[in-house]
Amino acid sequence: MTAPVRRTDATPTAEVRHMKWWGWGVEGVGFRHEDKPGFAPFVQKTIGLDLRAGGLDAERPDVGRLQVPASTAPEWFVALLTDIVGAGNVLVDDLSRVVHTYGKSLRDLVRIRAGEIARSPDVIVYPADETEVRRVVDAAVAADAVVIPFGGGSNIAGSLEPHADETRVVVSLDLGRLDRVLEIDPDSGLARAQAGALGPDLEAALNRDGWTMGHFPDSFTHSTLGGWVATRSSGMQSDKYGDIADIVKGLRVVRAGGVLVVRAVPSASTGPSVREMVVGSEGRLGVITEVTVQVHRLPAKRAIHAYFFQSLDHGLAAMREIAESDVSPSVTRVSDAHETAFSLATSKESKGIRRTAQAGLMAYLRRRGWNLDEMCLSFIGFEGDKAHVKRQKSAVDKIVRRHHGIGVGTGPGALYDQKKFDTPYIRDFLLDRGAAGDVSETAGPWSKLRGIHAAVYEAADRAYERIGRAGWTMSHLSHSYHSGACLYFTFAFVFGDDPLGEYDTVKHAIQQAFVDAGGTISHHHGVGLEHAPWLAEDISPEGVAIMSGLFGAADPGGNFNPRKIVP
Image (cartoon, rainbow, N blue to C red):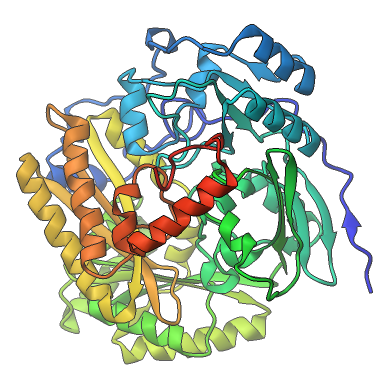
């Protein structure tokens, strides 16, 4: 037996890193289209936005122009919190409070850029360990304050913002200093880590000892382990490693007067799963401080291969057969024709042999009778030792050929791997130019996926007509399961005179189409405030009643992130 490795090399972060308050990522990083010759014509054609009419680089808005509501935290309460976590770790300045007001949804960014801040947290607290979290929570509950846990701030479902009519003091409890991998148990493949660890830091710490968690959500660069658990996250390689609900084996959650401890055991029959209650609870049951996760040895080989399918129907059928087989890829993704066109438009200009090869491929597909306007791009990933990867790919290639697909190598897959976390920057690029670009995702059984896809397109098109704007919708399948898969939709249009009203019209149409066609209201973004109106249609009124009973009994004072998920 190998003794667990207790990590002592990590040092608590002196200064917690945050994204810029008006957009995604850090200052100085953004999307540019000048090296992508197909992008501007594509945007002009699909939503009528002329990018050649004059460049507009994203500039840092002036925080001084924001009307930030004054903090209502009394001096004695701020002093009490300072005694607990130390000077410099309790902040009430406007910028810190703005950073912690919203997540990073399109709705959040439209409001923050317009200076619409109805309610901000009153005080930001940075505890250094679980003991300090307990003392802060106990002090806040004793003062009947509201506690909203804060990880990376990447949430896009409205899970972070205080309610506009909240009269109590609101504490944003930032877990950024709890960022360490504490222990690795090599015999069990388990790692204990603090909840505030950002994705890249967590993965780097595991990689140093030859391990990976294998969890890579779109928000990976700027989201935390605790945030993944709180919102029931899924990652790009969940086909192999599972969603976060599969990965989490143990938890520590600070509640008023105590700590909930879920021990890391492989399985248990101990009544309704408390672990499952915490996963996806969005801070309503307490503050997650520590998570024990399943980890895996780093694979010897990892490859993402690209394929083209003649149509979405062919691609979906291939993904379903792969899911039913004993093949276990790490990634199964297929874009519909609209998203495939977008992907090709965002590619850099090809030159020389590569350009000739691409032209030759397109000519070959036309000769085979393919309609290139219906062609769908797919990425399938493989991990393991070389022999395993070879066997897996060989089996997948046979399935792909049965569904009239064609492999095009690892070149496009390598590009996908490099750019997989960059999509939010395109959204901000469009927002800088007065256009909406946002996402909604669902999951459904294989038998209903094509119907869901058609229903969403129809609903979105009707919504574009109602707001009088040219709109674009595209989608891809990801996260395949034995019984079904996730469909991830992106929609875009140029704003008119009422940006959020127009956005609501389109977003609501898409969400309603999900439930009407047999899908769920969210596969991995969570509920928050954004998706709560459809919860009863998804899990039934009795399901909402049970969930409300859980939250009410566990937090009778409504101190933990109140009114999220269910009012």
